[in-house]
Length: 136
Image (tube, rainbow, N blue to C red; front, side, top):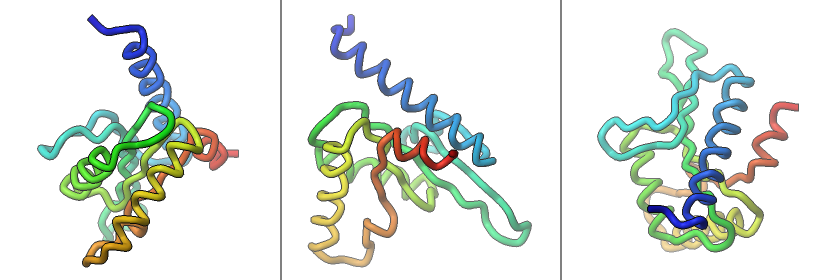
């Protein structure tokens, strides 16, 4: 049985998923929820194919419904999941500025280590207010 805190987190995640789906549809993306092609579930994927001779563009949204610090393990596991799931970009949809700063700071820190993949070009964090601001 879920505790009241766990139920609130689940409810918040469902609300964020609904908002994400609504914005994607408003922007004329094909929207899918709970997509798993073998690497694990991506909460929402927006897909757009504007040119018949070019591949479709996919944006994967991963929902983190809790405020504050986002664990680095959550970020790395989910970025890997999105890459394996053939997403062109991954967006962490987080409930507030503190969680957004946490994700952005950790992405910057991982990029500072070096390597071939620069996460800041691939992964981003956004709040629901910023997401909804895109359809005004």
